[in-house]
Length: 372
Image (cartoon, rainbow, N blue to C red; front, side):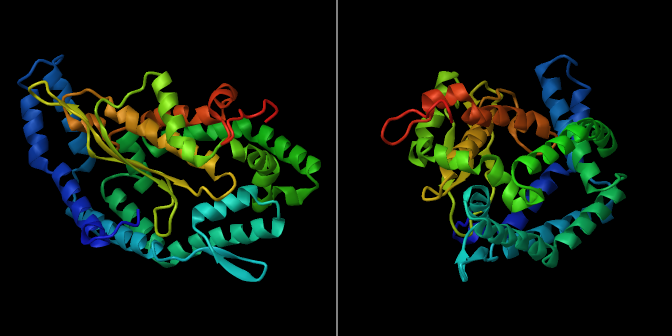
């Protein structure tokens, strides 16, 4: 998030992450949990809580000493890669002059700028990220992670992550995804041919052209109806109308793009919500971000969409009333699909015609026209 202070350093992040994973990987805690499970009724609240503890500890405990060493090595490489990425200067050469931009700014120009040369330059600016990370530890990180996962009996690191989060492995997942891909491939191929024919030829399918030709002009015309300064109001009114509340949560919002800031929206919880043993309520503390640039065309729409998405995560986890904080955290064994369902539904509202008719209002108080 480009925050200053020693508590936000890469070394401190690596240290605290290691401490957390050591806590969750304590075999004594798992043994104690299983011992207590034998002493409580199977259908009791205590049993439900202990089973969650058992499942969580099981995701992090590594019986192999070599696997634990590899996990620590992976964490160190990951921290170094993140630190290096934060120093990368991105931008594009436009009309012979280099213009520094974040990845967010580059993506926005690829999507909405009417000049193809500018879009191509910005796309090429984005592509430098791939070269940079592969030269600064990403390949080594993948190798170490895969080696660690294989020591634990998994096919690779992805298989390890999917198994912990979703309860089934990568083979089962790709059986589902391959069926989906094969079933939709003819539709996709037909759509691409039709799109190229309608938009002037194969160049319409170039990555710096396709998004703009699909919606770039519409995004520009919609821009006046999504001023980002109204985003917090639109979020609040929308959620309130659906009776979504945050149960006394404390929320820190960081909504604008800036140099050095992590270039993807996210939401995390320094304090998860839970019901304490005495029945008292512990509200959540949530930090979430968006990446708006109020001066950029189209950024109001994308910034609001990200805000609604991350605010959806925050609302979801703020309202989990369970007797352990482990029920209200985003790491394994919490399912990714389960976590994203809430937020993706809520961010989809921004593209809904009914929603836009009510909430997409210009600075002059004009509602978005129906033809848009």
